[in-house]
Amino acid sequence: MRRLTVAVSAISLLLGGLTGPAGAETESWQVAQLLGGASGPDSRSVADVTAVSPDDAWVVGGQLRANRGVPFAEHWDGVSWTEVPLPDALPGSLDGVTASSPTDVWALDGYARRLLRWNGQSWTDATMAPHGWVGATALSADSVWAGSATSEGTAYLQHWDGTEWSSYSVQISALESLAAISDEDVWIVGRYGANATAVHWDGTALTRVPLPGIATPTGAETSLHSVTALASDDVWAVGDYNWLPTDGQPRQYRSVALHWDGTSWTRVATPEGQHAVSGVTPDGAGDVWMVQDIPEIAPTFAKKELLHHTGDTWTPVPVSGAPDGRGVEEVELANVPGTTSMWGAATLTYSYSYDWRGAVLRHD
Image (cartoon, rainbow, N blue to C red; front, side, top):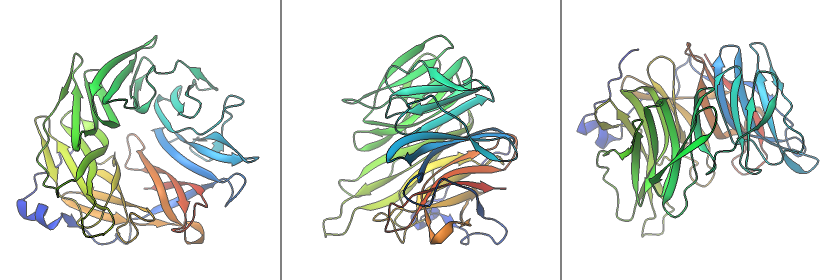
């Protein structure tokens, strides 16, 4: 795997990072599949995506049917996307999905507090994690790591060993994301008090790992919203800090990106301007994609843009083929293992409307 160069000069940090042109001519995301109707009945909000191989991927979310919310799961078989039946009378939405193989896929219905598992033939109920489910990584059929919601400053790192769940408490104000490399190498990120935090599991204990200092205005709150691991010595975490100015301006956001090299976390320059950040995902070539709000719209009508990090440059890459001038309201990304191809699970809408349209995005 190509090593990432993430040491950033003080000048780059002050300038807010190096930003490439607004999308190279040959690079773009495409709307590969629209899901559900354009509005009203069967309109869909897409929540998550996972890929196992070039001919095996899943997209999950929720939709309106007969004026009630029900979840859906769409499967890619290498040729087309097909909706796969879920257990009867399942309400709400599927909020997350993770897979270790074509016969070991997990999905969460947070509304119903039900955990589902795909065995290669059908979806069935699985044993729910005792403290809920916030982000998860399935390493194998006998090893799944999941976070939990936070209550009164405590959250849980949870592990499925093929038979039962184990839980390990961690002091954290908000657990936002989790990445598992192995059963002895798991990262949790989020916020502790008003500060960003990263906690590491080494197979025995949870340890809060120091982060580089982030200069922020008085009263600002900093949080890491997403973490992803390319290797034990190649981990990325992204988030933002925000504050409410005293001069009547709306709340301000600035993006934050950090990189772990196996020894310490280092801050990586990000584009300057008003940005809230929601996700980071490997690109299959030793670098990452980051999801952030488009500054001209954020935060009143939050629309996402996809930035590709290569070397020391973040390049905005456009989404082509969105119908009716819609923007990307929410999006989650997944790399197709063994390739540089990417899937995206997106909810498309107008800047002034909640008229959702689900879509699958593709980047090759």
